[in-house]
Length: 159
Image: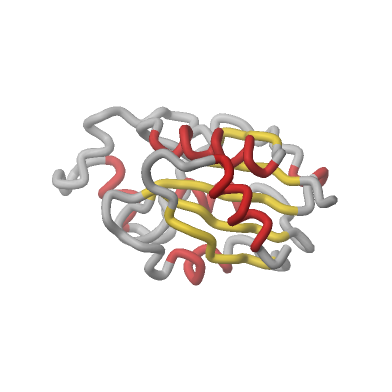
């Protein structure tokens, strides 16, 4: 069996809850992607053109610093990578995470939470940050997920 990791970024706790459920369903280890400077409520106000998240998302080259680079990516075959959808794509800190490690030969399965968006161009925009990896657009997992439903999804993946 392939060894799996659920790595996730969660600004408000929603994605963290889904990541824990997915890790349980997949029998995977869990790793939280943390920013060096945590996001505040004001930072996440997408209606404020001067909020941190808005500024970062308007600059495709933005790479918010990570609190640590301690994920043992080399030990895993499959990485489930979760995040909230911001402006129809992954937050730029997800690019920071992908660029901090060597994912060559790994399978990365994306999952996200969203208030209404789908993946949009997320997979396409992340591919350049993880050369040599097989990147799969997974699912938007909103709300409480059943362990059985998540297990069925994981088992259906071509990994």
